[in-house]
Every structure is written in structure tokens, then in C-alpha cells.
Length: 225
Image (cartoon, helix red, strand yellow):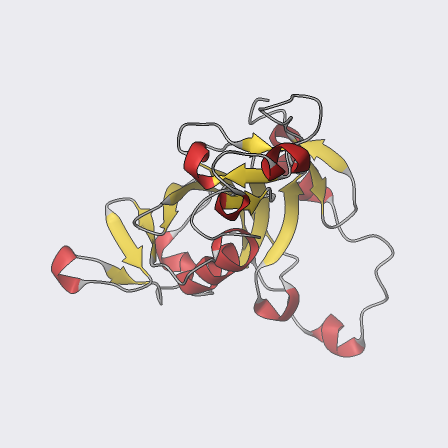
């Protein structure tokens, strides 16, 4: 499956689109049948957010679009990525933007900076940057600011706009059923995606298996979704 044709669901309207067409769809999509705004809401100017495409660097079928307030700290995006896709054991993480590295635990002697910097100080529409979680068993992501949104985000937080549908991968042992478990011993060789019956009889043992989840960190470290 190519990364541009993998399908995903819009969180605003529920429609299904390819990753390649989702950005165009989101430009005009709003949540359907929204209740009438209150007078206070009418008097409040809507916030502006960055529409950011996030994808696995190598596991490219995993992707999502998120809206992040332009004045939010970079750490807010880090926390969102951890919560939705990555967090397992409290590992360190870092964004690389241009020549600068912004880390969750910055080390001054390495020239790293804090994630407290606000997005509008380091990002702009069209900019590509990268992210890594866990410096040992690293999950790498690529990010791109695809547009500005004037709708704002709930309570100034990060809003999930769209996300890929979970890939349906066959068991690599029998090929007859969908994989639901990943052997962490075999995964490093690109193998070990197993259905329940095959996982039960797998030679590495069931204690080496992790569940298949909709994340580029599937099968890595202790991540269970």
C-alpha cells in the first residue's frame, strides 16, 4: 500500500479519503450539525492553528492530520504524539526543525533546546521537520505544516483532524487470517506478524508478543496502544 493512497477517516465529518486528498478535504470541512454558537463565542475571535501532517518515516501507512494552536508550545504537540501513537515507558523525544533540535530533556552541551518554544516562532506553512521518540528503539516521524486553520481548537488543545484506517495485514505464518499479534523477536527481521492461533504456537513464546495496534510503534519496546 502506498503512503499516498492509504485511506483515512476525517474526524470532523466521518468521511473517508486517501492521505493525498485529505488535506484538500480538510480545507473546507467542518463538524456537521454544529449547535448555534453562544453570544460569548460570537464575540470571541477564533484562534488560528497549524494543520500538520504527521506520518511514520518508514511505516508510511500510518498518518494523521492534527490542528495545533500557532501560539502553543512545541511540548503540546510532543504530548499529543505520545498519547495517541507512542508512549510506552516514558522515553525521551526530540523535534528537529532546520538545524535546531528541541528535546523533552534538552542537553545544553549537545546544543539542544527546550520544547517550551512556541510553534509560531519555529514553524510556517510548507515547512517540513522531523520527530523521534525513544533514542534506543526509536520511532521516527516526519511532519509537514500543510495549512493554517482559522477554526481554532477545543480549549486551545491539539485536535485530531484525520487519521489513517488501521492496515489489515495477513498473518505471515498461515496467510489465512489477519495478524493480531507481533513477535518482538522476529519483528526486527520484518517478520512475526501473526494471527491468534499462530501466535499461540509460535516458537518464541507468547510472552514475546505485542498486540497489533494502529501506530508506527506497533511491535516496538512495550507499546500496546
